Length: 125
Image (cartoon, rainbow, N blue to C red; front, side, top):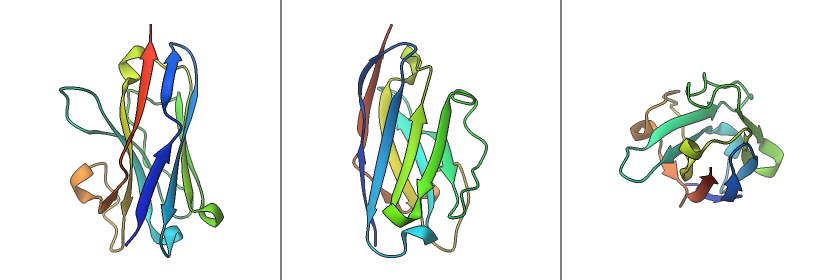
């Protein structure tokens, strides 16, 4: 079992940056494949980025490619989403998720086993 707590969301102007953090409690954080998803009002939850225990990432969502970067610090049980050049269309609740062994290595929300409560990101134009 692992519990995930996101932080770092807020209100920012278009073109600005935010750094989201997700801290995991529980054992064996380094064994989990970690992902970030987001959900805008009236829309389905969508994949943003994901990273393996060794730091390799899946291809980013096309909508964030070149602007967002995912990273992790296994010693601190933390996964980070650095978001630059933010756009109003990035406005959403951002969720951290964990995929436990045996890993699925996917972009599908249904394949992740644990979820945080989410953090709101609002980008004004």
